Each structure stands twice: as structure tokens, then as C-alpha cells.
Length: 254
Image (tube, rainbow, N blue to C red):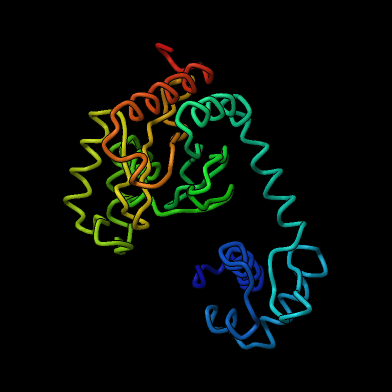
């Protein structure tokens, strides 16, 4: 990105700062400068500008920065423009109520899985996640669904470009094995994250289709492996919820 002559480097740096602030609770000037490879004075000027426009805010107690309310408002507006979210939400609520687990709606944003809606489990032990979270495609149930149902050429390009980092001993880091897993997901109509991004966390996901039969999202439940693993009735509920969501979006055959 830095070699692209069309891009304004200062704008690119400011947007990278916003991405970093969105991924962590707070970050200091020195940490941001190190991550961006910039002078602390440059980062401070960028943060001051973002703060003046409400996109960043400084914690007076620590001197560190977090996302400002304007960034949250803009992100919320962007999510509102995804007009299928309100249509699918009743399905998420019902799925949460039927299973007792946190339900998510997720789309693909570039090489990441973007969580665009969530209905929280009422259980004391549940998945920690938030709307706007960007997760790896290859080691999450929703991400693997989004990969498995991508057009073949697009899927191949994504598989080639992904950095397969091991988050747990269960993470699939072999490209050929991951390709075979995606084929299996496509054939059976659902995916699972078997403690692949976090030990103890288990997720089940299925694809949601749009009016032209195209993949638009993945729908999932997430919770402790002790509650979700080896329960075929939960797989059936997730797949049915995904079919119901597809019907609401006008998918063929719904």
C-alpha cells in the first residue's frame, strides 16, 4: 500500500491507526509509532487530528488513546446500510433462545470474517465477541463457511493469500488440508471451529444465501466446547436457522 502513488500516506497512516485502535482497548503513542514505523511526533500529530474530529479519544489517566465516539457512530451507520441485518435478526434471536448460545451473523470483508450482528447468550460462560470484530477466515466456523462457499477462483486466491498462523494446536495450518476441509464443509452444509482459534471455544456455522442464490453471510452459534461439541441436534438447528434466514432474503428454493 505504501508504494501506491495514488494514496495519500498521511491518510493511510491515520486509517491504520483507527484499525489498530479498533483492535485493542487502548494504545499509547510509542506503541503506535513502533507498529507503524513512524516517528512519535508524526503519530502524535495524527492522533491529535483524529481526536479533534472525534475519531480518537485520549484517556487522561493513562495518556493512551482509544476509538472516539465518532468512529463508533460511523461504524454503526455502515452496519445499518447492510439492510439484510434487521431481516435476519429475528432468526438470530430464535436460534439463541433455542440453543442457549450466542448467535452471530458474519460477512466476508476482504480476507477477514466481519461480525455484523450478535445476540448474546444468557449463560454466565459464553464467547467474548463484539459487532465489528474481524476474525481470521481459516480458523473460525463462520470464516470457513465464507471460504467454502466463495466462487472457486476467489476461494483459490484467498487460500493462496492467507497466512495460516497457529492459534491453538487444533488450528489447520496446512493449505492442502484446509482445502479438503472446505470441500467437506461445502458438501455437508455446515462448519465447525473445533477450538481452532481459542482453546475451549467451539462454534457451528452455516451459509446464508441471497436472492440470486449467492452467498451473503454465515450464521453461527458459539460457546464452550463442553456444551456444543458432539451435539448433532445443534448442527440441525444452525442449518435450519441459516435456511430460514436465506428464505427471508428471498433465496431460490426458500
